[in-house]
Image (cartoon, rainbow, N blue to C red):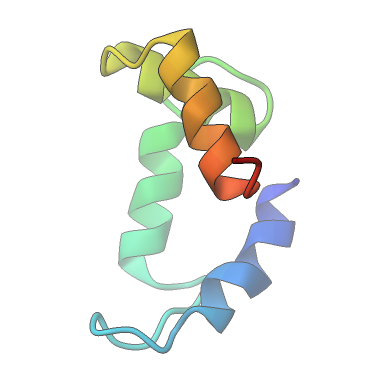
Length: 72
């Protein structure tokens, strides 16, 4: 999924306690800038690199994927 594909999903989830979400939101842009500091040519790889830098193991990462993809 490209970053551009993430925008609609992010914006659709604007019914939250943190207020409106839009692709120009500074919090969103800050997150994208922070993730860009991690290795990977696509955002998914940057997120994985970030999680590994936090100490997440491959087994834990697979469990996270299972939860998000509802493969339980």
